[in-house]
Each structure stands twice: as C-alpha cells, then as structure tokens.
Amino acid sequence: MESVLSSTPITVIKPRIEDSFAITYAPLSLEEIYAKADDAANGAVVVMSGMVRNQTDGKPVVSLEYQAYEPMAMRVFYQIAADIRSLYPAVNRVVIHHRIGHLQVGEISVLVAIGCPHRGEAFEACRYAIDTLKHNAPIWKKEHWQDGSSTWVNIGACEQSGENC
Image (cartoon, rainbow, N blue to C red):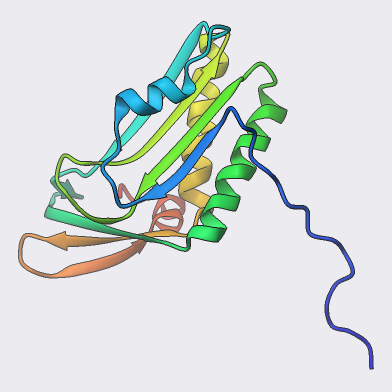
C-alpha cells in the first residue's frame, strides 16, 4: 500500500534572535515594541498599532474577543519576517505581537514594528506585515455589539471581502 503522505519535507522557518513575536493575553505596550525594533543601525522604526474601535460599518461595538490557533499563527509571523527580509533586505528588526482574549474599545489588539536604515522600506515592510498577518494568520475576532448580540469574524476573510472590519 502506498503512503498518502507527501514525501516533500516541510520547511520550518526559525525566527531570528533579533526579532520578536508573541500572542498574548497581556496588554500590549508601544514602548516595549518600539524598543524591540530599535537598533543603532536604524534610520527609522515604523510602528503600526491596531486598536478596538467603537463601531464597525456604523454599528456600535462595545468590545472584541480575539482567539488564535497559536502554533500556526506563530509560524505565519515567522514566515512574514522571512518574506520581509527577502523583499526588503535592509530590514534589521521585525516585531509582531497580537493580543487575544476580551478587549475593550480603545485597547491595542496588534502591534507591528519594523526597524530599518531607511524609512521607505520600513513603511513598506510594516504594511506588508500587517496586511499579510490579517490575510494569513489563524486569528478570529468576535464583535460584541451594543444591542447584546455578537458575531465571529475571521480577520482574513473580512479583509478579503473588502469589508471594513
């Protein structure tokens, strides 16, 4: 009987020691993420902060709940960093931290920071990181509405549909 498993080896991407990745229940700190992306060779550190807003498509939101399949999400984060280094070789620090659990309006849900000698590459790499994370990482959010109802949303599916989630 032949094996149905592929004989193609799976490439495991290991994070670089200078990078930082996390999925956590703890509140995220802009100062901590900036410090992790900082380096004497940088001419720029670009930070993107995603926050819980008080509405989606005009419907009042009171809170969000995030869940993630952490092992796969971390692999996606590592792949994003590897892709960034391929696309923007000058990047010297990649930081991606995502919060899970119950978050209130105004709380930070995700922080991405890129340290790089040049601002143009830092901006482009940061945008690539957050856009790719939202499309590829197995992270879901549950929107809790003011009327007491709630809805689960896969972040990637939301972004691909063009909805403003």
